[in-house]
Length: 335
Image (cartoon, rainbow, N blue to C red):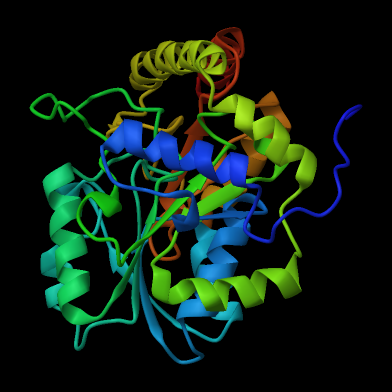
């Protein structure tokens, strides 16, 4: 703050940050990524809005998973797209499959996947993500891979894979990869994300971004360069170890409360539970729990417009003592 002007930067972000992000992808996934491939945005939310505007027209069909992050659906519909939700349950680990795409009447304009996913925390195995990317390339469908929770993984269900988090760009450079400093990098309020974008889409992204935001926040960009450094990584990996401990607290504690139907929490910091034995109105139930105990849960109706009335999402991103206290309060409430 004392030495930099902190005025407008390049529309796609400073060269230093784009080079740091490119090196992050090269070293993590072994893929060729240059600074010119990187588009820095105002949060990953800004990345989604830009790519939706650049790639899709009103009336285009875009496929998302259900349950899934509600902002995909809401933003696409606000832009006039036709959103098709694939019913992804335990049988596919709450993730879309090539078979589901093959069953559609026609190939969609776009497919959004998230691995690890919000709200379930489930992941797409590398070979399955590669198959989805190949299908999209073959059918003219833009694959948008939400990879913002990469770095927060626990290995469950992926013991045979040396690298449980794979990137869509390992298979297809025609796909779009979304990243963020909000999750693994613990910079939620700094509002900085990025995408790896195909060259064909960059002119439209450039024109849109220069009109809509001018540039991402300058001070956040300077800070984020250091978040990719070795010193920061040591601290951030410590956060992941804490998440892993909290995850175990929940996975051990919830069954003791009679909440046993849980999605596999492979990554991120969420546990997604079916509580049909407790309620058929998750919004009302979460409100009652909050009023009675002070424990805040996300009602499943946010993430699943069809079956979310009997599901809830737990977040374990906080302190372990808070997780333990929340479980104690829930136990007393349910008793």
